[in-house]
Image (cartoon, rainbow, N blue to C red; front, side, top):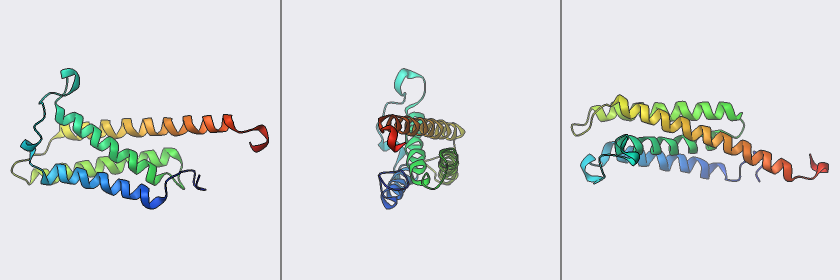
Length: 144
């Protein structure tokens, strides 16, 4: 394990952030909205599929951001920064979409982005605490 507590090197963590952000940029601004060919309703028939896709995309962005930001910061600070940056990126994408004729600005999409980012970072943080607790329980008394 690296001395910062994360197994992946920094360049790989930040490359993951860039990859996810580029995918969101492509899907938000360059891909035709009609080309998706998806069902209009998402799982459980409660929300539209586009809201689920927003939540998943911004969950991925927030999760990769949290992992990239964590070294040298407390988990709470990394989590808060990840959510703020992911949501800020999402708001920026919505404003950019407002200028594209086939697209539009949607507060519902922003809400889906916030929910996805928040839930991902919550799961990320709980996962890190769980793994840390499990690793500390495995260590012999002499190492603690």
